[in-house]
Structure formats: C-alpha cells, structure tokens
Image (tube, rainbow, N blue to C red; front, side, top):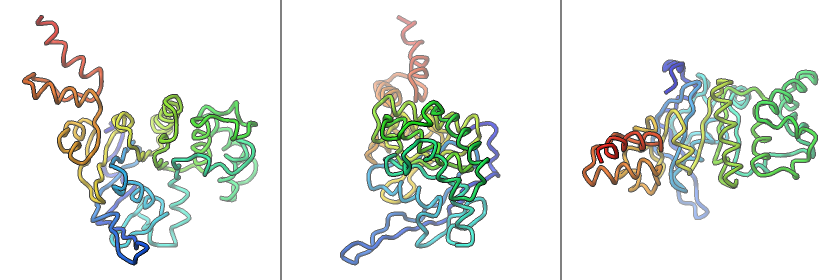
Length: 288
C-alpha cells in the first residue's frame, strides 16, 4: 500500500454485489456472488482469476457498463444503479479493453484521442491541450499524425489509454489490456499505466491473468467462480501458494520456488521477486 493512500478515501465501495445472467435456455447463471470490497483513490489494484471467474464482469460494474442484480456499487458515493449519476460515473472511470482495435475509431491518432473529449462537449482549444497532454503521457506524441492501423499492438493500446486519459478520469479500469500483445508491447503498456498511477495519481484497476503484472500492484483481489476468495498485498496473496494452485492460478516463479524450498526444510522469508529470493538465499550460499 502506498504511504500517501488514505484508507478513508474510498473510490469504489462494493457491497454484497450479485450479478446474474440468463442463459439461452432460460436458466440463471450467477457470475458474481455476494462480493463486498473497497478500492481507494490512488491505488494500483490487480484483479486476478481463471477464465470465467467473473473478474471481467466485476470490472464492468465499476463504470456502470453492468448494473447489480442485487447489492450496490458506488463510485465516490454515487450509486451506479442511479441513472442520475451515470454520466458523472462514466467521466470519472474510463475503460480500456483487451483488443485496442475495438476502441480506435478514427483514421489518425490525434483524432482518435480527441474523440472522447469531443463527445463530452469540451471546447476545441481545451481538446487540443488534452490531446497533447494524453499523448505525451503515454509516450505517443511523435505518432499523433499516424494512422492507428500502422502502429504495433502495444502502441495501439497506448493510444487507447490516451483516449481515456484525455477525458481526465479519476480511475482507469483495464480489462486484460496486454492479453493480445507480444512481450515488448506488454512492457510498454505496463510501464505506461504504472507511470500514470505514480506520477498522475490516477487509480488503476488492472484485470490480468499474468501474475508478473499482478505482483507489481499495491493490492490484489482474487475472484473464483464469482466469489471473492482473497485480497491483500502481493506478498500476502502470493504467499498462499497452495490455495492459489487449488483455484487454478499460477504464482510468480520466485514465490513458487521459495515455497518449494521451504517444503524441503529451508527457512526462507516470503519472496515475490527475484531480488527478494536472491537476498533470502544469500545466507545459505555464504555458509558454503
């Protein structure tokens, strides 16, 4: 948890949230079951779970793309189920999805980034400033006149993030934004969203199935079969190797290796990074 995060400064307050879908056969399917949690302003939160766990459904509740079947979701005190607040919530919480091609709507990068502010009715001179600001923040200012179709996957996703950033949100929710990218593109996107969190103070909620991405978060939420199974710091969550494995999730390699060595009798501290594992193993190496 970052030191400057005030625990009383709640951005999302989710209380006993249920979401039920109706299948093609008319049967009910519960995608989310009695989820209660809080996300604070300025946090970098990772939500992890296996395919079909409900993590993307939960993400769509954060800016009212979906509404609760039962229970409540509030954003800075505004209930997502209250249509009076829908516009304000959508302005405060931006969404970035897995496939950037589905979010890029214009033939030129700067026009795409301007699309959101234009729809918000922002004056032209301010739109220009916002586009410059957003493209600069995601490292794409030199590509402003390019066609999105000519960009790499990582660059496209950074433009999609810029399009959300230009709307000046308090929070950006990213639903598996690196799933379709190569390692270089994944690194570019992760560096971008960490910088937005650390330098701009934007709350980040990242849905991911890459544990090496989740381990960089301040707080981790684990969803399984529509229920909240665990939450805590990366060290608190990834130290529970057996429970995560039972759910069907991987753990970072250093955490898994430390767990296996401890089972062999070595007295190691909890490790979630290569640096922590190396430091923990040093005393055993020096003894020899």
